[in-house]
Length: 259
Image (cartoon, rainbow, N blue to C red; front, side, top):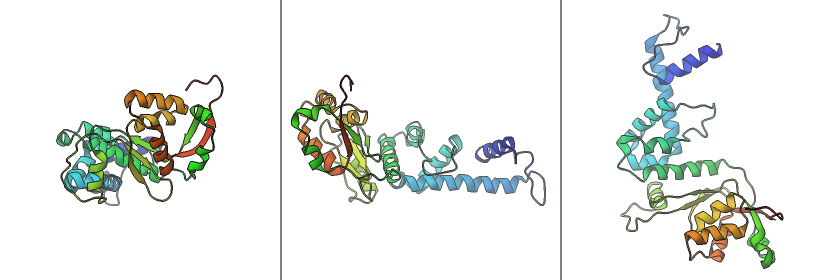
């Protein structure tokens, strides 16, 4: 099958308005519309199921029927671009943000982003994190110049909604119940060992980690965190990220390098 034929075949699979591509035949007829329709439906249903497997909490929130319908629309608009389905669904949160039938669930795109981060963390490389003693061994005068290497599974998901609480209730981590505190939650997602974990960040902690991840020295990351949260506690935040296994390496900022 030529590349042109493959392109026509793939495009017709996810576009119901397109006819059976020229050159597709069966043993009974040329361009078999019914057979191709069955195959097309199976492909779309299979991709929708792959999305459901990646976003179980989202499925629980909206229900299987609603999710399947929403996923089918996504599949037709954004088909896979890779033969591997491990990353299929990237962009689903942005799609849901503009999906009118789900517009009342204003927190849903951020829950999906949290599930995205969990999926990426699950497939990230395994690297042993540093122990707290490795940081404690650095002389205090040099701490501000440290640049840290972040674990490849680590990600920050920020939200104006209590997405960690919502996710936990719909992922079976906690019991369903009313959410009394509806303030936003920033999540640290990481897999230091075998299990993907979600931690709520401390005040200023999300900005602190974002700056560290961008290669800023510790001093600059602290300054950015304090600008957002004047009561930022460096000791508490370092304790949290070290305990979570976020840091896998440290080095001093070279002279003249501006973080």
